[in-house]
Length: 451
Image (cartoon, rainbow, N blue to C red; front, side, top):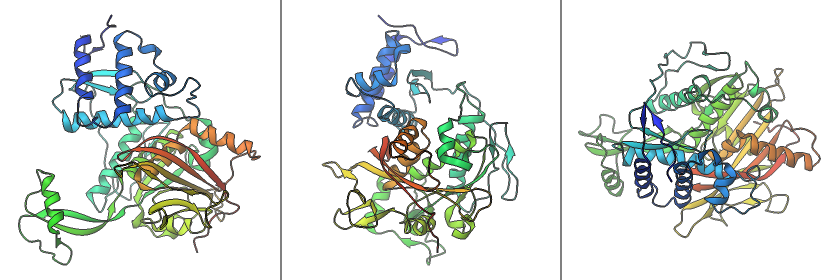
């Protein structure tokens, strides 16, 4: 027997309309290989249909939809939360790219496992954000959040990333459309230290990867020293994308201003976490700063040694680092000596098609020894962008941090050390981490040297 309809804009959606919306998602190309996400979505929609939406829990999803055993513990296994995150992104991608004309849509609101059915027209008004200059001071938006004004960026891509971070902070904290109060958990303060203080000012640096970018030109570009004709195979691949703006012959050029998707997502999560504690965030591309400018400040750097100068300098003097391993044929997280029980090797795993399905992230935290302000640096790195995002999701998740805190206590540590590293294991679907869990940690006896 179908449950009560969902009212949106004064209209009640019938059970048949909701079933059709669900089937459209399940049959889509976007969800073609996402079997667990389809089981997740089908389960919560069917519970909603029979009027049992209030009985949907993390445990019930794990055991009834995702095949977890009866003794499954959500506190020890973040798989459901990870798949909820992936499901939200997949649904957004489905309606944005594959079915922008869908009359009735399904969403999974943050903080809820109950499906939300809505019509295509957005019920919310857009939020206007005033744009300032690099010299402008941060704007105090409310007692709980302060967000710096947008800078004048050297590239539209960085302007987009900065806008993404700012908008996400507004949505998560100062302007909560869904009426859910965002409260900072005390365990966050234990691990983030001074970065999670009310009134703190944190520099958030996102590293860009060295890349060959593609741009089409109807006529040969005026700067042949910068733009070179794309190789024939690359040009054919670019043409297959059928981009509306891709008119003309494609040329390639060098860039260090293209962040990985997982890195950009990690930046958003970091900004949300800091702002939730009442701090302000200033966002900059890492390559715009000299490493010395990051010393003795509250800093979050998102990047790995193969493309971040700062991460490369720091991780050459830490117990664990990210490097290419010739034997594994992969980038790995490893100790500086040969792999042993005390210096393990964390190697990503690929499926039979060569797709990366298990990745690793590395969190490096250290106190700035010469600082009189008790400042701290956090570096979020990973094997692929998904590894970076998994590391940040772990570090911003109170449940995951309690697992780490419990392990520290079991190992005889009465409090969180001032300098340490954490390895996070994450399963991966394309570029999106599905779940994340503690793999290992190391306490550093002293902060790393930048010399």
